[in-house]
Length: 155
Image (cartoon, rainbow, N blue to C red; front, side, top):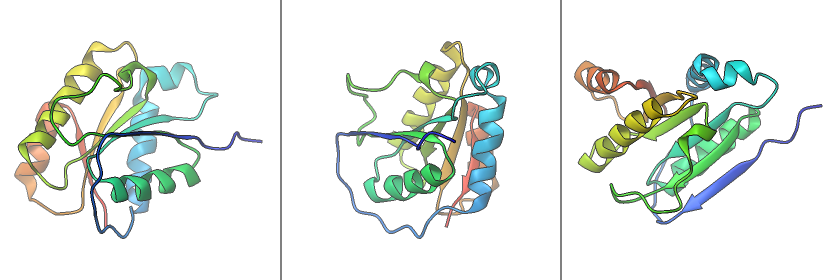
């Protein structure tokens, strides 16, 4: 019997949102990125561990619930500003880092850059998955991939 999924939340901001929920394509991307993580491959008996970086509380809660149902261990960290706080989780503890890029603001790109640089410095080399609820064209996806992330659209 599998352990019940766990969700850990770090909250240093509040914010409204309207999101209908992620698609199954997102779950496929999570599985692929988690499988690519060297830490996940060496520790395959555990649940994939996901760090969700999002300034948007309600969309983060919807996505966390979606992933809980699929037996992922999810840590939600909401930060409004580009500077992190002292309570940020260690990236070495995760298989996949998810960054919400829907708003396409400079602080979102800063968050992605910090996640990519931090992931490269860790022993586990977690995958970076960016989510957006708005289609922004191929250049947006290329910019994310140049930084080391992958993009998935959610509805």
